[in-house]
Length: 379
Ligand SMILES: Cc1ncc(COP(=O)(O)O)c(C=O)c1O
Image 1 (cartoon, rainbow, N blue to C red):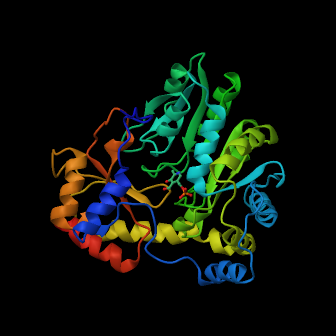
Image 2: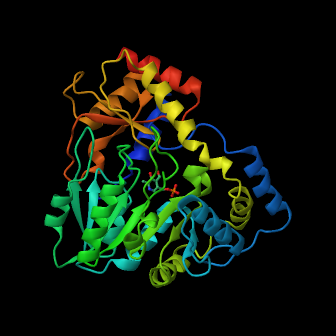
């Protein structure tokens, strides 16, 4: 009999809920992707590179033009320079970058601290390397981090912390004080940090995104991971990147070259041109804040409760006042009987902690949000 290397892993909840939504013709606010297209200009740039013959392998660390453009973008956004040859690696989505970062720095028996609810790719990657995920549970409604609890969880075996800011699935964001405390903890315990910042450009209410790249101490020990798919509404193209000091990037690249060798060349070149125009992403907070506000004003009369997401394109809704059912059952029922698909939050906790909360993606067209809200108000 085959012995599974991931005995606890089944089909991801995203595939389950999207499949159920399709089967029952439900409005799909479950999976995190927009139902509108990327910029026409970006599409034609990628097309042009394909037509002009840029269809073969590019260097494994990423096409030089894109690494150069990412270096410039990062300097413009966060005021810090990174060497495109030594510190920036283009990956096939943030998912691949996360896998390579975790694999490169997790040895058997190492403890890796994660914050739950946690994006679902972290734990399997840690376990495949023989590491031990050490979850710290965050709680509804604000999901803030109790750093004293983090200190208590650190042992001689702790090697790394994985943070996700802005946070999926909760929409919570870390502030400058959080990052300063994290820096102190990481430095005094000599820990590495993987910082999943795929929603770096989706922060609301006038707040500024706090990146590990902006903190000198964290910058020296962190792997920063970004997703061009999230920022430019093209999740299916799977382009992301990792920024890390040379020593960490060297180890990261050893794994990356054998996971994928390189990322889709014409798409890299299209992005290299496109991301130089900062306007294409600096409007994102306003754009998504409008969508969040529209969604929340449309469901004002519903029986759900919420506090507005601070970032990302997800809104949590609590159904405590509506039903006692388990969140997985309730989410499935809403999909099959009411025609709206969401993601239950308990699946992102190792303990399956169920706070009766569902996640809804509001990266959707007006008409999708209007139809969704109509249903939500009838529940
Ligand atoms: C927190 C988080 N990290 C990583 C990813 C993966 O990003 P990509 O599509 O670039 O692989 C996602 C996608 O939903 C995410 O929400």
